[in-house]
Length: 194
Image 1 (cartoon, helix red, strand yellow):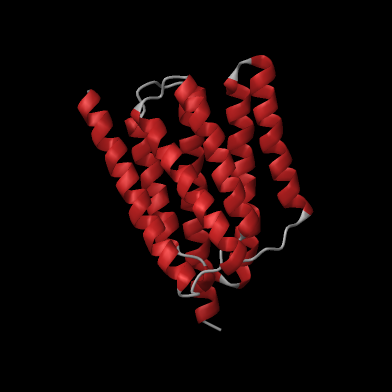
Image 2 (tube, rainbow, N blue to C red):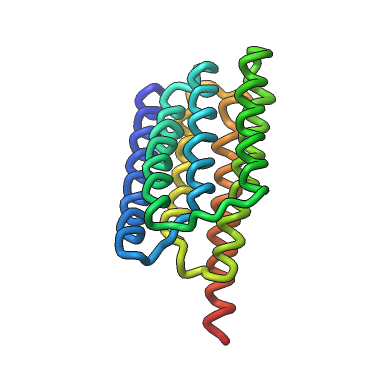
């Protein structure tokens, strides 16, 4: 069983690297303009989720989350030069929720409510990217989000311990990435008919 968990961990990490590599290429060729604040949140929130998963003995599945957080931080840095840098009040609200989640975890020593807040903040953190993608759907990489959808399913399979604190975050990302891919594809089709 341990070997299958490691297999899923490596597969999830490989999918992350493949997905993000194509995204890096699109950033450097100016085909994608990442929203800086979204990527900052997508670095911070999985960083918190990774810490929660490690504290709850999630095992191999946690590493998919940790590697994703690290890569998202690199994309955030790149988005400061190559992406959109407009930050709304909503962006700051989601950052506040992430900070409350961290503080709550430290005060109560119970990460469950923290992971719920992190999962909600991550889902709502998609809003700026959804707004941008509605008007400019070709500026986002469907490949990245489709591979992320699959990666998070695999991350769930790689978990060695299942509790709300370990599975909620990757499960929420399965949902949000799947919805986002669908929305971008639908919007591209709508605009191509005009």
